[in-house]
Image 1 (cartoon, rainbow, N blue to C red):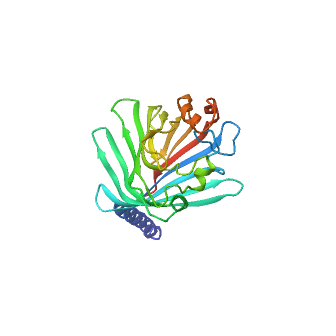
Image 2 (cartoon, one colour; image 1 turned 135 degrees about the horizontal axis):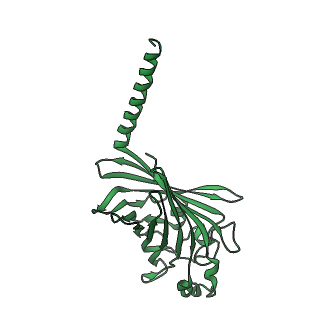
Image 3 (cartoon, one colour; image 1 turned 30 degrees about the horizontal axis):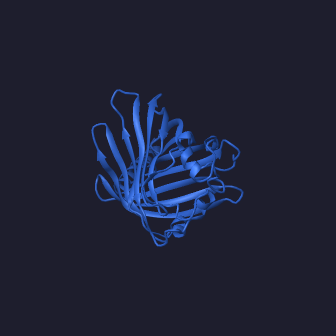
Length: 287
């Protein structure tokens, strides 16, 4: 007993010290992530994600990841650098560096049963494949999550809120990914008001059903005014394992309400049946 007691004390002290150190670090540094996995098409293009045009959206399945490292300067706000990384799962596997965004993040607005959290930020010019190819100079905007959870209700509202404004050196310059998906010269946003609201029904404390839609209004560089863009729907299942991992596997498709947009680019009015694909959102707090 005399021999084992010091070992027990040492183990207990080490555990307490480690926990205390981690809590101290978390007061000043935070790390969160949000991954958008665009997977197999449900039509002819199983090995490629498809977009609302009915085209292959890239050279393979993609997992666009926003990894935010935050230096907290108050209980509510932090300086936030967002690494933007995109692995592409194909025969020619690659990991694209899509640049970084610098800004201020935290709880932007909140009420009794709702809150808006996220970051006010802008891409750094010349950093990242898309930024270079699109010749981005600056693009201030918001990447945030809105949640509204009434008490004693199984129903809730969740959504991504992402308005943004872009300035380019060359308004016609395009990135490879957009061209791969069927875009034309100058078909890149200058002004975008992007909202992705969803209705959620809780099956348990950790799981639920979700149905959402992308409400996207934009002025592209080759346009003179703000226009409605494609509005795909997603339907799926949510599950929160813990604070580090929440998942949302879903099916996404662009319906007949987008036929007029497809006609403008030469696709038939029945092309919407070829826009369905499988996707997964993953997000959580690492630190």
